[in-house]
Amino acid sequence: MKEIYYFDDLEVGQRFGSGCLTLDEAAVKRFAADYDPQPFHLDDEAAQETLFRGLAASGWHTAAMTMRLIVESEFKPAGGIVGAGLDELQWPRPVRPGDVLCVETEVLEVRASRSRPEQGMVKVRVTTRNQKHEQVQIYVANLVVKRYVP
Amino acid sequence: MKEIYYFDDLEVGQRFGSGCLTLDEAAVKRFAADYDPQPFHLDDEAAQETLFRGLAASGWHTAAMTMRLIVESEFKPAGGIVGAGLDELQWPRPVRPGDVLCVETEVLEVRASRSRPEQGMVKVRVTTRNQKHEQVQIYVANLVVKRYVP
Image (cartoon, rainbow over the protein chains, first blue to last red):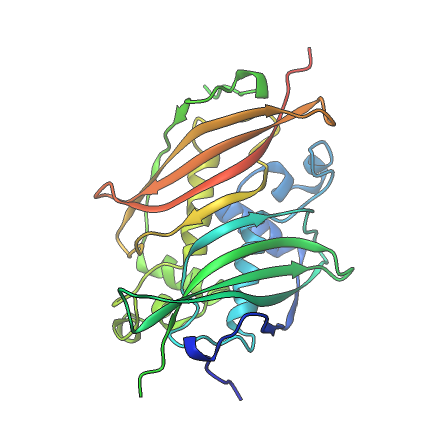
């Protein structure tokens, strides 16, 4: 059962969980080779000498995996998950091969649009945690969500 | 020739260009299948009925391609490109198959660290434009950059 949330159904304080995803080393290196080819994302030995002190996932990989978890979660805004942008994003600690990532989405603000009566803006905080329940990524996003038109 | 920029070499107002990348439809769909499986990123026909009115790249795909362009650009901070986070990010217009993306990085602020004398924080604005020179993504990132230790 996947319930669709129109703009009008979303309220400040609502929270949505997600499934979880286990990251393997091959995936870390594959994403890095395609999009972020730096030693600390590609080679465990070279990574020891860097600020990360060991292989770590690209922050953009964490963001991409987080998106996958949200798309497959119970958070189903009408019109899809369409981001106009982010207010902020933090990567407080590295994501490592073997980490299990899960996401929580919390509604922070809902704002109707004057110029576009068929949609509204919904501000959400998206927190990605590892298996120790440590935050590895937090961002605040502004989503465009369809209003219910009978 | 790839010059390395230590923290001490970076100054407010410095700008760095990048090479450019042409996005093809297969890459849009492949990234979407892996990380953002929504109709407007996967299927041109289904995308016509959505807010995007046609196939568009995931914003996270744009961010990932931007990272690739930066890593391969002349902007080579000492210690690599290590982001602590972003202050903001906007996706003002969709990225379409066939678009040619290029990136500009501008130094906005440099700040030494009291607690970590071996590194500093460098705030940069990263702007991604398409072949019409339209902005498709703008973000402000906080990077950790090594100081020069003789």
